[in-house]
Length: 256
Image (cartoon, rainbow, N blue to C red; front, side, top):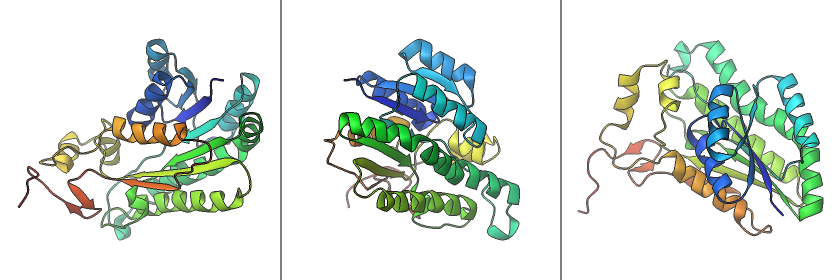
């Protein structure tokens, strides 16, 4: 039986890479994002079914849930959408940026869970298990200067995941968290820095082999394809050059 996954943030970066990879592995995939034109291109190329929606809008989530119910249900929620805005100190932060980060990273996850759990429970009853997978960040684990708003939002999302796993104890529902460190994607840092390409490029300058979107997608696919009784509670992944959130090697990696 073909399983069906919904991947949020599927118009670029980790979400797009995940949608592509799951589709190549035989999953039926619904790709969700705001940018309909990018989803349409992905659908034409891969067969990922496009569904444009704004996950900060409760009405869009309700409409998405109804459409999923009418077209085949859902076996796995893969929530990648989110993001960061700004790199200001706490005292200089823009409250609206912080509000957007909370809505995009935390409230979107809560709304999706509340709306989609009935469908996931139906799938678990039919197939033995269903999955809720969230891509958070190492920013949820360690604070850093200029990261306060994003730290707070991702920590909030991570706590949502931990609480949800306990609340669903006893049900055949896997709750999985993937927390990447430095990932070089085309848009994340660029968007965070307000479109400043030079500043975005400088962040990755000299770093040997940062993670790329496919690396994270590969771990997501492994977690979903693992035997149904195996739950990867939390996977923290970083490039070798990043030993900790604050410890980043620049220049070639070499033995001493």
